[in-house]
Image 1 (cartoon, rainbow, N blue to C red):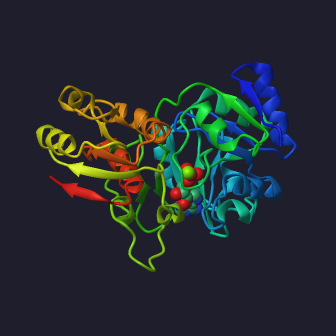
Image 2: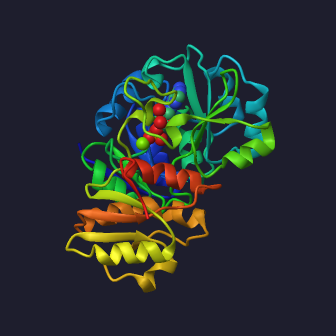
Image 3: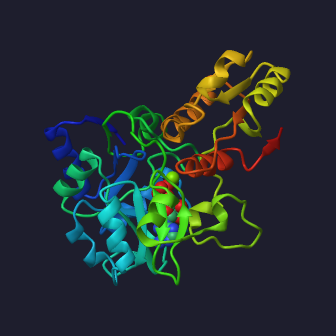
Length: 338
Ligand code: AMP
Ligand code: MG
């Protein structure tokens, strides 16, 4: 398959919308990560997303809408808390899980009776949804198991020859996937942390639970509330080990383990103290900067031939919970206490 590289301009977005209307696949920029979009109401097109990514058949997709009016036909009901959260955070990087209506094909939800829905804020994603005239099912636009794409080049690297088009909308502002919250159970549960933080959500709807899978490996045989949590995720080819300790202990450990192929995934403040090749993922006290850079740096580790990456452990407050959640998966929960 020939993959067209499109630009962020009206005629290219119109061409991309046309591809979607004809059942094709388009990688699109969003504020979180690039998404691989198809018409969510076209089961055949959605099936092709799973094939293009090599995605497991039991890992459901998020449906993207541009207007509130697109929501009611997709869901059985809209809980009051969902209305409050939408008012506070939509359009933006928050996904909510609703009871699904029959209009949503089973292939989107992998047979679950719930559906994940998000209204992105990125102007290109919004224009594509509006012009295609349908909600778009869109997981991250990478090969399954690997690191999510935050630039068009990442999508090109993973999906050339596998999708109809890739729209280059520049680097993603947030850099991590959306926050996912379940609202159709007895109590709201945070299934995946993201740029919209637990604290921000609690300021709107009161206290919420955090799913065990956010910070802990799943025990054998446990079925996670969010099926995606059971897969090895966000992993570069290099082995990643997280070092939990202060700046000094980190520098000392890393410098003592200098060997060919070993790299430090560190904060800006660590740079002057390190004597091995570095990949810098933001400032120690600025989780948003870490979120923006983490996936790009994990991909660069592979590009630069790293075999072992020692990552400085991020703080777990606010956006930091999302950064830590992704890094723990990249490291297969391998953490050394310093
Ligand atoms: P991705 O598309 O790569 O951002 O992954 C989407 C995430 O949302 C995965 O972790 C899915 O398991 C999760 N998800 C999608 N739909 C549902 C649903 N109906 N219930 C629970 N989690 C869901
Ligand atoms: Mg993904």
